[in-house]
Image 1 (cartoon, rainbow, N blue to C red):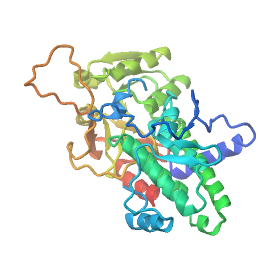
Image 2: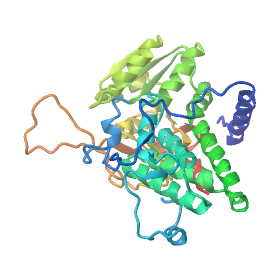
Image 3: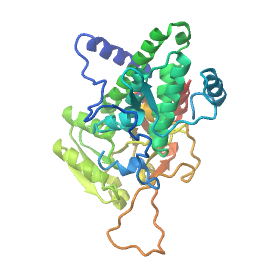
Image 4: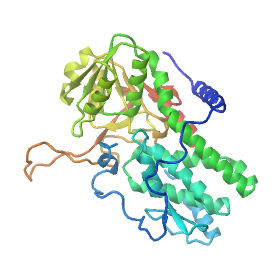
Length: 403
């Protein structure tokens, strides 16, 4: 089986960096703000940005769009800077800026980045955490790491059901602060290095989709039929790249009820002149004999090598496996989460509103879960920015990411 190692991706990144040094970087390092990120300290940023806590914030905005530091270490660090170890981060964690008398809100910065339609939620969080470092008034590395930890916790509490948001924050903390060299530098040099590492991590995350699209092209052949489920921006990038490479293929899109994400994906593919057929969700088995492969995204990739994704992914994988059709997953490495679900109910529920178009009697219970868990034995390969992985290799990659 064809394999592309992670070292190839690193080499490719080095070449990209070398090429980018000769021309201005096109990636923005500041969000497209309609209003300043630095708001007056009196403004109420500690309000809950999720108006309906019973429904996952991720699924409220989808249509439009394991702790890193130990508790003992955090208690010692907080005591060293004169703070009570039982203090908890506020939902709208703010950094005071003494020079202007204004405050910086990580939640406000995060929401500004989320306004970019093509930017993933986890990448928006990574960009917001990088801004925390730049805006920090801390005078020691210990204070700065505490501020980062509190900002990370605030972002994760914004939507506790978002797997990619939590994983992205945790990986950012590991990537930015894991070097011991910071302990031997003066504070200004160490802070500059943190900012460099933060921006580098953000750039790598932004490039992830393009790398995945490049790696997947050898598996899409002329004349093939691809079944996709729901709307995944990385899967769309894969198919868009294949169309740009003049490959001839057609796509079956499931409708993706109840938010009709498949309809949205079919519209995007039609703009690219890709032959596309829209299916009702229950027609997956009926159409599977015409399908050559299944391509899905993922809300999260867990330690077992399985994935958590939009409701219906599990049953499509079951049907495909029974008919010997390969199931490919396209997922960025910042979605690799330290989770190990044992069954469908062994994960935090992410709820979404269900509209059947007709009145539902009050005595009828409605299943509102938004996602399911697909075990690794029903997946063939995972296309990631770390390389093309079999499900059994995911645990090894997770160890490398979180070490």
